[in-house]
Length: 275
Image (tube, rainbow, N blue to C red; front, side, top):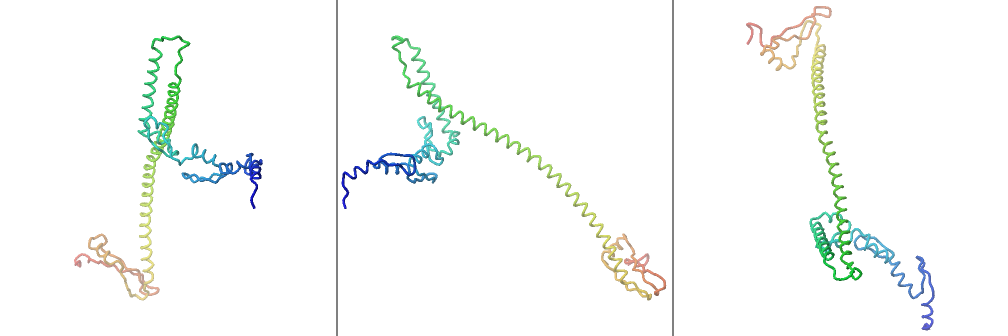
């Protein structure tokens, strides 16, 4: 079935409202509107999606932080191409600073030329004199660029100053901490030494008590003595060095109701009996 050509023309001229926005026009322009305003586009720099060509273009020109842009001083010798998110860091580079100096030099040259033109004798009347506005506009533009750079440097200087103060405070705190840690370690060591000393005393008391308990286990009540000498080597050394020349045996009894007795032993001998 073939559609009438006149019918097609009439169809294209029908008014239509966009179902996605407030746009109103004829049917022949509807597809173009859909393509321009409601196409799903993705930014190749940050992967953000858009359903409008206009929003997509606005994003790339003004908003995308990952897009690569030219430095604002490109025409003054700064060829840098920078990610927009890092533009503030670029302003601090040596390359950009040289470009700012070039801007200042050009401003001074143009200003001097301007002053010379004003000071020259006029051969025409004041009404005929019409100074060109283009140089002044260029100067104003360069001045705005310079002011922006100066503001950025001022902000960065303030930020670096604040960071420096914060680092100084942190350093002061870290300087105080070692002395506190050292004092804590010294106190801990003193406490540990005290604990060790008390533990040594307790060990001696325990050994003495253990020896007494062992002696009580071997008490004899029939007049016989079986004496087990513990730590014999240490006691022999004590006897030879005369720190303790003799030792006593555990008590024993002649009978259950008899005499209580002890034997005394000189491990290194006594008097003429010494070895």
